[in-house]
Length: 436
Ligand code: 5CA
Image (cartoon, rainbow, N blue to C red; front, side, top):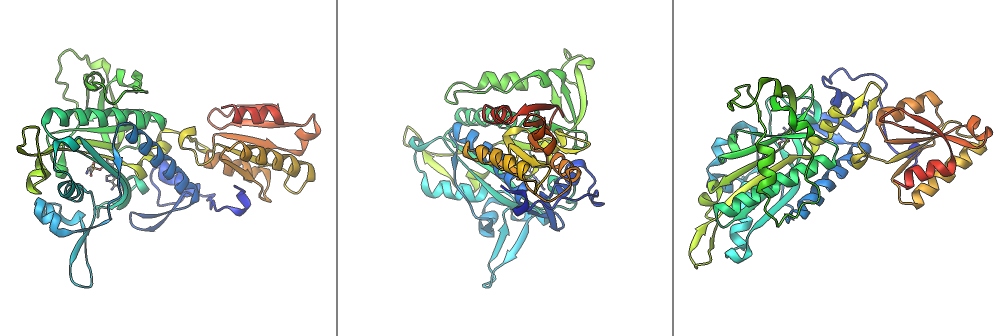
């Protein structure tokens, strides 16, 4: 992508309305712009990151045998009346009438719709377990939308729903998603802590919130310090027994309050921090399946009400959460897995034939090697280019200047995260990116 033809409307000044660093940096890096309270436009750079985050979520869920569908944003309210949540959900649910005076909800979540799909299509234990998910826009008319996409009114959520024939099987589905979540966040470069949680209006009696530690987080967290040393279990066989993984992660202390129930945990082992909830998993039991009559025949030919679980990730909240966890005074530092581009070629002397030629050559070679690369070919001063590129946080910069080319044909290779700069030949710089 050529910067000069692209659309990255960066801001020099800090926008006054942004109170937290991620909101500030997303606006300044031209990733998003506000349309209305809690409602945002996703500009090209922001959209690319959102798509990369979605793709990781999709990939890991597919590995865990979840199946993607797409449910509408508008839901007939009759389903909500059937589940008994029409009144209970209250003012957070945006209600809309069509020309025939039929009422719809702009979905704040989709338990009712997915249970309706299930009950109309699945009749036998032989077709179970099933886990159906979608990545779809949600609307919640939050009283206090704030911190940009962190608490928006319109936001992108991945919501998955498991259906099982009995409690034992439902627990396995819960462990499967719990494990998939550890892997999803690890791949995004996030350290998350699964914390025993309240179920709120979603319901059920077992739930975990996945929390990213960040100073600006809305939740207060107390957890065992060993959480920070525990790595996600990559390469899991999702058909195997996942209880040991679940037990390992839940045996460490993590809670929203400081009441340390377990005697054997020493106070000095507990860390206090603030955190952002990027996902939550719930065991629902029969809360929705009973009301909506989702039944299947079990192996004895008897009808049973199915057991459910639901599993959410705030896909659009993950983007600012990554920024909260990974930035410095110059701007964003993207982990490679979610970076909008892997590398940027910065031409310091645009219009000078030799730097133009070499920059173009590097750009083409990276494109040919299928590297997602940005070419900063703008007619701007070097200082502007350095500032903008540090701000937008692409992991690797190849800086091409007249001086280097005259002094032995070298370029500079800068790693955004460490700030480390190396003087390399064009060949060596290319290998650094392509070899990775
Ligand atoms: N039905 C379940 C999950 S399938 C559910 O709705 N769970 S939830 O309420 O916990 O939301 C799931 C995730 O969406 C949360 O963990 C959070 O990361 C994200 N989320 C919730 N509300 C907002 C909001 N207003 N803005 C941005 N993200 C949000």
